[in-house]
Length: 220
Ligand code: HPA
Ligand code: MG
Image (cartoon, rainbow, N blue to C red; front, side, top):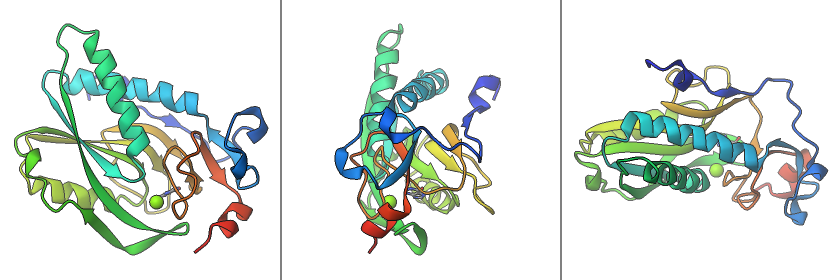
């Protein structure tokens, strides 16, 4: 990219312990289930404003078809689209956004399972000829993103870009990064801001590291 700023992401170091939970507001029922606040909600929101700015600079000349990857992407997608709209409305050429959804599932407990499913919808023909922005909460192995890109290409969009809030540094991880990356994080299982552990913690607004106790309590 011509603008170096856009190749950057906030990189969180391996030894970042997170903030002490008690410094923040959080749902009381998760008190012992998370170790620390890894990325506070306010920091997530500010970073999303930066991503929205970059997206508008690249794609703001045309209308945007957003494809939200459920369930984990729902908060990121909602906040990203709001920020794109807000920034676009204060420019001289506001764009229109449309949001569609696709549902995937691949994780059981804190492990990625081999069978990755597209739960629906089958038909994405509304993407044809559109500038598509795929919005995903987290990219680790990159398998999901690769499979999804292949699936989306079948519907002949005009362009496809990917926004990932988190990219996890794992051994043998994704070789191709999303076009827009929020944070690059160490290989730790994180929850909150719509990221779940067996469907729990989606209602926590910070991104936190789950505790051993939390893993046991909500294990399947
Ligand atoms: N947390 C929640 N869901 C996930 C994660 C994670 O760290 N990695 C892949 N899916
Ligand atoms: Mg999940």
